[in-house]
Length: 423
Ligand SMILES: [Zn+2]
Image 1 (cartoon, rainbow, N blue to C red):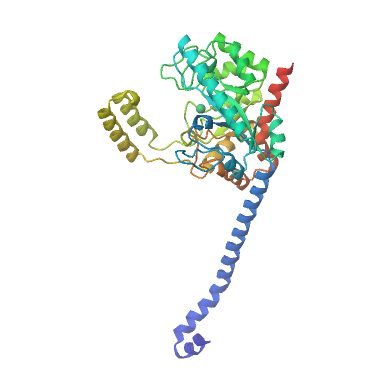
Image 2 (cartoon, helix red, strand yellow):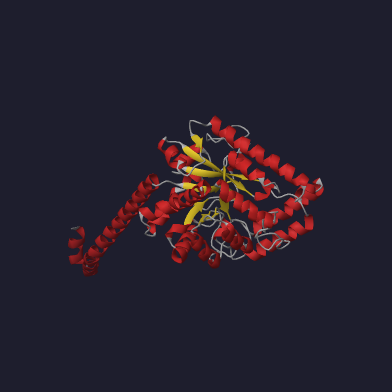
């Protein structure tokens, strides 16, 4: 009204008034679009939450047992305890029903002394896991059969399976496969970052030792088939992978690996390997390790800087106090020059998309590698697992497909392996 009376006196105000009137419909349209956008976002979030709650969710690889000395699986941090990426309350918060705890053993020498030491280490880790599950029996239960996850989920508890990361744990003693089966192991990652007596690793600096599976490795795979232990091909070399798939009577799993075409790392699976995996009816569990999800632009330069540091100082444990100060100073400089950049859930789901496009929805699962290097910008611990479902819903994956990705595909392989063992 004020503008109207003034505009008689000042005609330019009339022009402003006219243009203002023209703008009104545009403003209203923009408001409606923005409200609609927010409403759509809310609908997608609600749908994702509902699906995430409904489907069985399984994480196929976490190195949490390594952190058991300083992590309280009941949640929170007491004095002297550091918090890891997994505990039972955060699993519940993140809607994760089942998890595979890894009995990880570092690679040592391939000799009798090494075998004895590693056997003891593995035994100690099994004992620790059993003890911690006993202590937390109100929150979680040990699981050994494919249908245990669903049964335990219905009790409102978390299901904890066990896998062994690095077949080095059995040394050259085939009878240990059964010993570890009896202790609850349901998969064995055939090797870790270096070659062992079973097969070659994808990352051994010395290059191949057997050019695939050794004769002993073949026996191990056959024994795993006989008992009902899944064959984990993560970490193993390409030659070892093709051998394992050839020898195994059951589908294989890759509990924590991504696709090489999207992130060129020897630990990741090439398209040729993925096509073979489809033939084998196996699964790849895309992992949340940032450097396997997305390569940094300056990756090569950064790796070179760390390699030079390693060459200059050798093993940090063996340094004198003075040398250690210098080593730490140089390491800090590299860290400052190449600050950590984490990949995102969207980057991870790009790998899922690729697997689905290449070999279909029946061959992809998720394995976090939490407490072993896993953690993304927007899924940094187990409480944020729902963000993966949210991204899947945003990209148009249906509930049935998400159920396969989160557990259905893994349990299909698990059942096949149990069936084979029963024969
Ligand atoms: Zn690993």
